[in-house]
Amino acid sequence: MQALIQRVQRILLQPVPTWAEIDNERTDVLSLFKSYVMPLALIPALCGFIGMSLIGISLLGVTVRIPLVSGLVQMVVSYALSLAGVFVLGLVIDALAPMFGGQKNPIQAFKVAAYSCTAAFVGGVFGLIPALSVLGLLAALYSFYLLYTGLPVLMQSGRDKSLAYTAVVVVVALVLGLVMAGVSSLFTRSQMPALGHSGGGSITVNGPKGKVTVDMAGLEAAGKKMEEAARQMEKANNSEALPVQALKAALPQQLGGMPRTAVQTQDGAALGLPSSHASATYTLEDRQVKLDITDAGALGQMAALAAGMGTSEKEDEVRVEKTWQEGGRTRHQRYYKDGSQAEMEVVLKNGVVIRANANQMNVQALQTLLSQVSWTSLEAMERKPKS
Image (cartoon, rainbow, N blue to C red; front, side):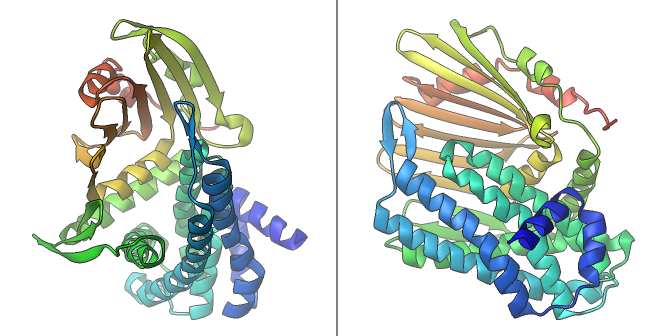
């Protein structure tokens, strides 16, 4: 166990020298599965079960939990799919190696797949508290950077082609994730999403409560965008997060006549994370709005890219949810049709995330309030290099 912990720490904190060590290690797929992948893959599965089925999500004084049996089924299925995903990712890395000046080597490819997923697995611990799930996403996105640093070392690809190699692997992984989500629905939902073409080189997954469209014809363009995102990831690794006080200053004193009644800040530097966060609560009578601004840096841009590969729409009798791209930004909204609650998120061009959650307010009113925050000013902020 001590060796596992040390390897996790080193690959996360010192990826470049650690990849060199991994390159020279002798192992096989089964041994690496048992000693590394299986223990770490258990973290997000188990923590997600505890967070959603035992702790639950509190909303307006009401705690919502996934039924215990359903939660157990989801835990087992997600764990099995995580293991399968790592194995398939290794196959993809190995198959693509010659295209980018690398050498095919199944063992080395599996090493890259297994160790680059470390951040995603460890970030699963945030699933214990559903409200912190966004931190798990940021941790998972760091796996892209681990992949980028590991490919040229273990697969011997040209360093000038590392970005393109990383981009293609990530794009394939995203599509693979979509397929695996469909497989998961066989066990966790009453109806499996239907997969079909929607014209124009795209694929649409139709589920019982909505649809997701992936632009397959745009994968080449997405790959180029991923190259740029990888460059931003490398830059962010050498940059500090935006000052938390600058984010705090972007929170208005009033929103739509509602005074600011509480302010909270959090600097991720204390935890070694390139992030900063500021939030405020606005209250007037029975109406309340919570506004959050988070600097996720290039990690946020990775999130925007992932979301930007498709649009998402879900609607039932009481609720509507939608994700789309607009003006180079990723937009997301979720609201109840009776106007009792609304939520909106915007991932700005520089990776800053703005989120607003309101009760006793419809989505149109919340959108008007969110426009009072200067998006362009936040996008114009520059991060300082690490000293």
